[in-house]
Image 1: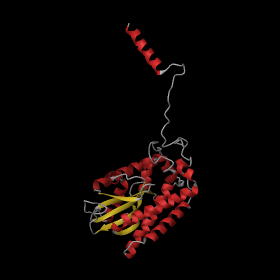
Image 2: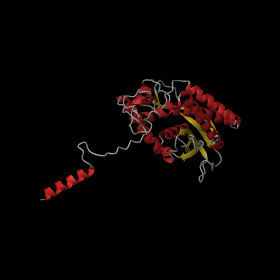
Image 3: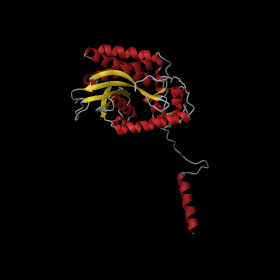
Length: 326
């Protein structure tokens, strides 16, 4: 654990990508291709950077940054991410145009960062931010690596983000920017938090499993409401670690076999909005020209090609049935 090795590393995001879309995994992780950026990815990057700097100030100086500074950091982080590589727009953003789409995405980034600043950050008691780690997986082709958004030691109850439950002790937090709240199940089933808790358990010398894992979801603003945050808490146990490494073992076998299955076309992430390869036309496993999220037009059938109406058809069937009875 935390040892320097020459083995390649798999991150939880890599595993999640492998499970969801093996083709995209092969392009990004194995071939080193950069996914074309979409606005949701850039909003998440800018928001994450602002939140991290805000909490680091709380660690260093005992207080959060002023709102105006949070806004500045969010704006600068967004612009840096936007300029990092070309951006692929979805159909709605193309209608707005590049300039307006960029402005709208930047405003969302600032709003999400402010929501976190007011709703979540005051209740967090961070020890470290963006802590990188490596778990040496002996006997595997890869080591496991990750980065914990917030390592927390909660000395006092947190009734605001988790009403009705007293959350005290050491834990791990992660932040997601979401269009909608995916609920408690996302945190309970997340393999990401299992591996992060596994690292903390190994770091303690296998003496203590973290008291909690938490996800702070920032729900993006819409035309009718502001951005807001929802926090969900969960726990992990040693049985979860065993299952996680079984899945890690299977992932290594899949990679070695080189059988990379593309995502299901019904997956909400297999859309131009969330996949840069889809949006740019790079993926051969999707029809990028198929209209998405559009209701099919209702077709009114007035008559058949031979001139018969529906009533004529029914009458003919009824007559045929009588002849058969005779």
